[in-house]
Length: 164
Image 1: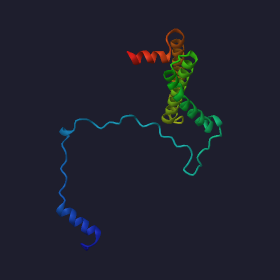
Image 2: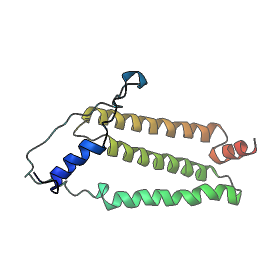
Image 3: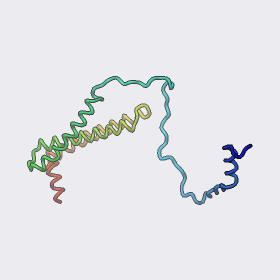
Image 4: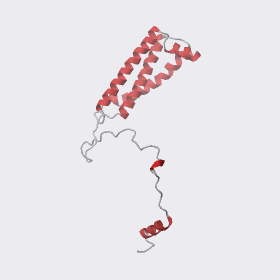
């Protein structure tokens, strides 16, 4: 065996110059290594040679959906600034602002649910999360309706909180 070959040189260098690393005693460890969340069920449908399924075209889940999200987001800018800049407090403006805020939040939480709870791994959890989101959205809309009709409204409430 020649020392100039890579394996021979590596073996000679390792044996002479690199000291073995000492093992750390178990008393120095403060906690065990634990997984944060258990791994979800590992499911493989078909084989590696099967093509990826292409969903049927649906305009509500494509560009129209994206355009609607952007329209709601851009619409929030004047709806948020107008009542405070103009000084007029109209109940219709307040109601549209409240509904748009709730709709914007609903769309955002819906995107989080779709992204982080895959249907093929957690179908029951996805259904429960969607029901919870829809229930919370209806409850918040009802609360804003009560706040608008029986109290001062969103913009006047924010003005009072700002001055408090």
